Image (cartoon, rainbow, N blue to C red; front, side, top):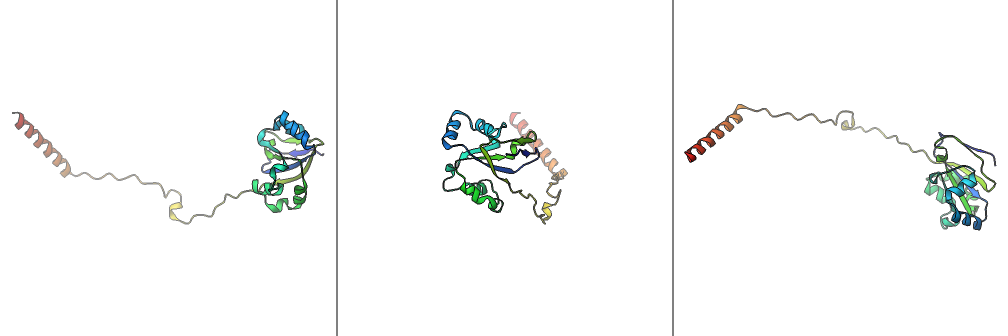
Length: 177
């Protein structure tokens, strides 16, 4: 297979490979090694658990690989339409490789003879654009509260407090005198 170049800047791309090893051999390898070790042997490149999925298609019974890709990874059905028959015809094991394999540096993969690239699919880009909100309260700096105004104190309130204190002192003097 020709080398597969994955740029460090790539994101949101999924590559689907069929694994051409007998089911019994794959099952034995997965019991003796971690999935990452098996995937490393297939890709001839180190991978972390977040960089790939390796599973038997029998695990998708009733769902199928095309539905798994469109529903599990939100791929547009039109994106996989041209490969749908090939994806449905696969059996055995499948390796799904994500762009994260090149998160630290660009990667050139030369997969072993046991892997066949079935397709490369881009995940849909989400649009985070929103329509402007016409409300005045949505305008910048309109939601900042003004500091509360302190009430003006008049002399009447202070005089009442002074009279109350004087009366209280006179009562105490009269009681204890």
